[in-house]
Amino acid sequence: MKIRKMLTGLALTVVAASSLASSGLTGQPAPDFALKSSTGENLRLSEYRGDVVMINFWATWCGPCRQEMPLLDELYTRYERVGFNLLGVNIDDDSSRAMNMIHELGVNFPVLFDARKEVSKLYDVDAMPVTVLIDREGNVRYVHQGYKPGYEEKYLDQVRSLLRE
Amino acid sequence: MTLVKTLGFVQALVLICGAASIAQESAPMDADAAMAEATTVAAAESESRDKFRALDKDVQSLKKEVLDLNRDLFLLEEELLFPANSQVAFFISMDVGEYFKLDSVSLKVDGKEVANYLYTDREVDALLRGGVHRVHMANLKTGEHELIAIFTGQGPHTRDYRRGATVQIDKGIGAKYLELEITDRVKKQQPEFEIREWE
Picture 1 (tube, rainbow over the protein chains, first blue to last red):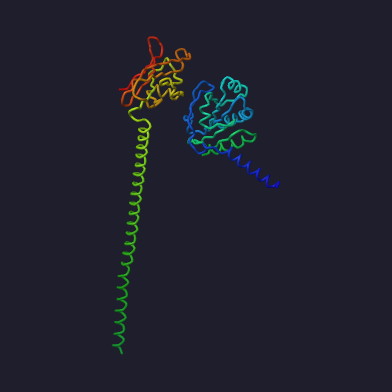
Picture 2 (picture 1 turned 90 degrees about the vertical axis):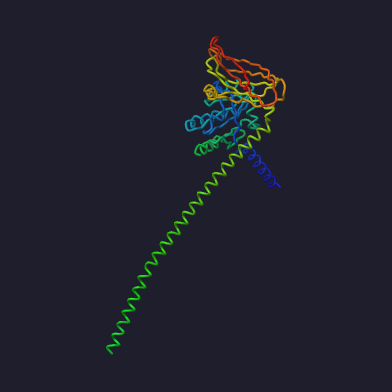
């Protein structure tokens, strides 16, 4: 009986994990958007066609985001010169909080403000953080919901393989 | 006996000569066969090349047909979604742009926001080079409509600038094209926003 329960639990965990890893957007062209960035510039996703792009949806109230962002920044600094771009999309209503957090964490990647939540809706963001990886052709290749220590290794592998394509 | 020997010798000679002549005849026959074979191979090769060329031509024409079909479908879809009679298209253009750096344009038709477009530096550059951007396309009933266009950006001395322009649209039968043009008013050193209709 115990074994059956354990197996059911394991099966449920596997199903949950696979549903987290997969998304309806995977394999689809990444929806285009333009948002105002932390530097005051407007940035449009389609202008990065030809580069590998990572979009990281985050909020100031999200603990794992705070953990993840410096690691993503390392990735960005390392691979920026070989065609890797990282766009952080902040979903807070008040962008000044996000600006404070960016300064506090000292991250260098461009942060965009989605106060109207239009872009988060486009990407079906229903967890925090959500990290989307887009290939050089502009197609969504990987979607990661949430963050746990060790995910950065996965990101590294995926970014490297997309850069090699 | 001698006669018999002589006859035998003559017979042998005749046989040898016959064999030699047969051998001589068979040699050109082999060469002919090889030549004929080579000709057949060359013909087969050229035939296959021709077939390949024809196939390539077929593929090209098929590709063209697919592209044509795609274009027709696109036009048909557009006609269905935006019938020519109710179609209204809004375009943005910029002239000079010394006193205004465009950031975004928001359009309201009859008090309802229908478009809100953020321009990147590249897009602004394209507008300054003479590009025209179709910012929105809509279906409107015939009659009077109010269009409000709100332009935001940086004005003279890099100050934040927000200006609105309002126009009454009289929508008749047939498509309507409206151009929202940003120009410089040199005398006042200010940008100017004009809405005009394409005839």
